[in-house]
Image (cartoon, rainbow, N blue to C red):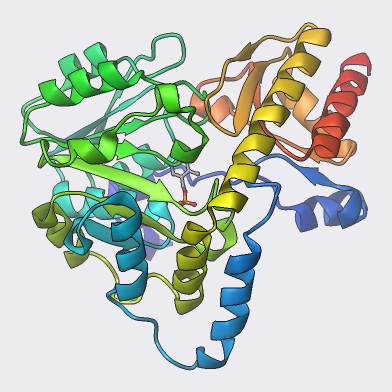
Length: 366
Ligand SMILES: *Cc1c(COP(=O)(O)O)cnc(C)c1O
């Protein structure tokens, strides 16, 4: 079709994002019962949302005829109080993916470049390519971001650096002092997008004081999300923290009502429920131990992870993925992340982890 031939080459060349397979889709394809399917494919929180968030959602439903607060006053106030920042330092996103896209659209144009690591989150190359800029992929070190190599990869036309910490799908972490040393060395005319989607899962001794760093680095943009530890992935809400001038640029490319009213009230309630958050974090720690022990028992190696997921090495990963699907278990193939011999599993409830481990053992016997 001629019309599509006229779309920019860099748009036509985009390889679409491959999401985890939805439960309903597998049920249709395999004739399985949805309740028998275990989905450990999208790093979702198996505990579910805070009851306070669910109550807030219920309460706001009669107001759905109205547009949301496009400025997100209440949610920004809650974030500002919780993290000790000013509302002018906050940009709200339809998921933190939205914030990643704002950064690309506000700071990149054709002819510019952006730096990210090999095995980095798949959305980085997507948003860079969508605006016609050039991605510079830096080889990973032990599957993680290599800060020194990333610094050296910066070119004159580089405007943006993406760094996921912990990284998805590898689960690797840059230690706080190394991360700080890295940010100190990035030229001030390059925006550092520090993607902290799994921040809440970090143990205190490895938690960077990244928000404190905002005062020192006007080129630092921190992305956080309500999709993972706060268990609101279906609502699509996240935020960015940066210098007010950077936030001002991001707001210029943001749709006026990008975060729904339901998402805003739920996020405020979820932020306030630290007990629920801690329960989810503890459940994840226990489940991580369970899965690591189970993998060791069947002689599979894995990349130690700081997130709520784990990538493990397995021969014939594509076939194994299919065999797990037949058994009602959805995990995530990561060949498109340059890891063809790995599968990624999200940490689930104890019973889900158990089902995954036994299905995996059985798939390996097949
Ligand atoms: C899950 C994830 C996100 C968050 O996505 P949302 O759009 O907030 O749901 C961002 N970055 C990374 C690295 C992730 O894994």
